[in-house]
Every structure is written in C-alpha cells, then in structure tokens.
Amino acid sequence: MSTQASAPATPISIHIPHTLRCYTIPLHAFLARNPRYHRVVCSALIFAPPTASHSHSSPQESRLLLVKRSATERAFPNLWEIPGGSVDAEDPTILHSLAREVFEETGLRLTRVVRQAGEGIEWTDNKNEKERKWLKLTFEIEVAEIEPSITTVNEGDARGYLESIPVQLDPEEHQEYAWATEKEIREFFDEGKGREIGWKELAGQMLKAFEVGRMTKDEAMLEDGITKKY
Image (cartoon, rainbow, N blue to C red; front, side, top):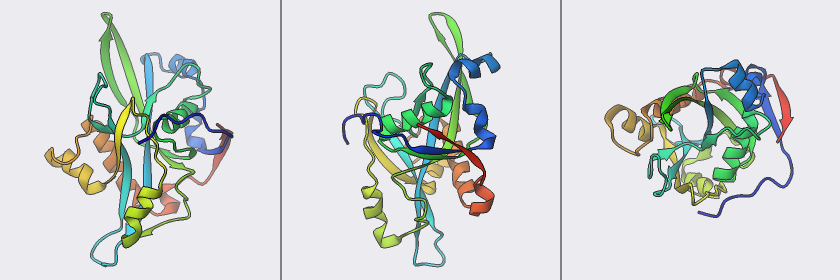
C-alpha cells in the first residue's frame, strides 16, 4: 500500500476503438445527449495474464484486479470493487476520466480501451430531496505496467509476477488489492460466498468479462482505433 499516485509525468498514447468514440466527449456533452442521467461513473476491468497450468485438465486461469474500499468510506465500506470513480466536469472526455481514476486509485497507466462491458448500470438516489439518476460505465482496459505481449505466466511464477505489478493504492479510498480468479467471483455471484463485492450487477459484468476473455484475440479485440493523449 502506498500514498496516492501523482499525475503521470509524461503523456502516454491510449488506443480507443472507433465503437467507443461516443465517450471521447466531455461530461456536459454526454449529459446533453443523455438527459435522463445526472451523474456518470466509470470503472475499469484490468486483467493479469492467465496462469499456464502444467495439467491438461486445468484451464488457464486469468485474474482480475479488485480493490477493497476503505473502512471509513460512507458508501460500501470494506467491500471489494474494481477501480473507478466519478466523471468530473473538468476532465476533457469521459475516457480521460477513466484514465485519471485508474491512475489515482492504482498507479497504473491506461494504454488501451479494449471494449465496453455491458450497457452500464443505472441507479437512483435522493440528495436534498432531489432525485438523481446515475450511470456506471465499465470498460476492459490494458495498462502500461502489464505487457500485452506476455500472454501467459508459468504456474510457478504466477505469484511473483502478480507481486511485481506496481499497484499503488490511495489509502483514503482503498485499503487492499487482490488479483481474483473467476472462481472466487463466481462463488460470490452464485452462492453468496467468497469476496464481498459491492453490487451483484458488477459481479455479473466481471463474469461476462472472463467469458469474453476466453475468446480468441481476433474475436475479442477490435483491431481498428484512434489514438489520443492523456
């Protein structure tokens, strides 16, 4: 665990598929196009390379980055989630917000937005007796600290590799992180066991992302895209 990461020293290129160009606009423009929403949140699915098992009967096992909310958080204290946060009016685009939140919460630098996970999660709250409708957008991403050319990690090297990924938490927001397997998340989703995840809807998105991740690279990843600077 470490103190909150500062902004990246130099800009990095971020690959964005053409299908997600609708999110390369600022918050005010997005809300104008979608007036039923008042606030937008973005979150990131970050996978580590799967573990290559020596057993032919055991499939390769991918792991997803989860972060545990601080005990002092007003909402969902001590629950596990994926990195993310509110889209701010000052952010140039919604995907800039995604990159900023990922870096602030984990110290990892977004390099590719792979795909959007689902259509989003909606909920309503009442603040000062005024109803507000929220939208949570989730994206699978790649980060600079996890080399995409590493497609698998040997079973015996998996723990050391995961520990070498320089995740840096903001202790005011999160107290712990873990690389969770599909089995761990499915146990919560199906049986109410395992790691406590804030929303079942979010757990469903995580499981879907594991399913999509088992597709071939040509099927799972959009090859064309645009590049922006963060």
